[in-house]
Image 1 (cartoon, rainbow, N blue to C red):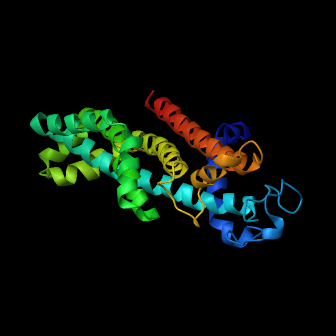
Image 2 (tube, helix red, strand yellow):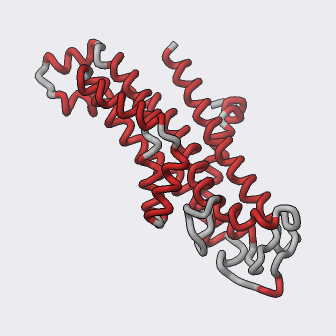
Image 3 (cartoon, rainbow, N blue to C red):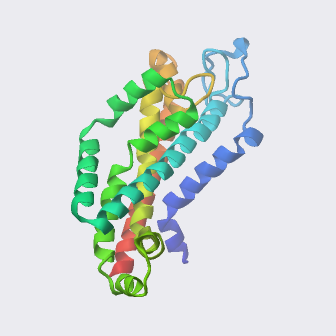
Length: 269
């Protein structure tokens, strides 16, 4: 790959950098995420505390760093769950067609019609979810776009000669779909799952901002914004840095999805 090609894939390097930073947080962060120092509370950004400190004197840079672990984990793992559910629904509907496809697509349409954030807020308020349960909740409301993308691909692929050859050789449906069809739908699946990560990060951030997502003392970008909302005018750094991280992460992930989509279209041509 040329230097220009590497530059064109800057969203990928940025996403990988964020993931690497999240993994290295326990060994590279300058302070412990829950280290309280009342003598240093509400300090503006300085050479000691680059992102300032909060109302308990905790280092904001460290909490943003640890918050990346939670926000990115929720985003990536819930997107993987949503991708798996979407691939299952779209794959079965597109391959079987008929009444099964009609039922699954009406279910998909119904889920798309339900506003996700209010639904998640109600579920989170009732269940008081832990981080694993939050991943499941976000993942189970994010599969519909993937299902539609996979269904469209499977409808086309199921009529290709290699699928007809597999049927003629005696292969059963349970083998044809995962072995012959879904691997050929992988490019579209990769694009859809990448975009699902960005949506999941925004949903987690919104839930945490409204106080029904990740709960203190665990840090996430969303609950850091929630805790900073009463001091945005007097201590703007408390909201600025987690908000900036959400913006950068979602922008990079969505741009990566666009790059993958463009690469897929170019390969098809």
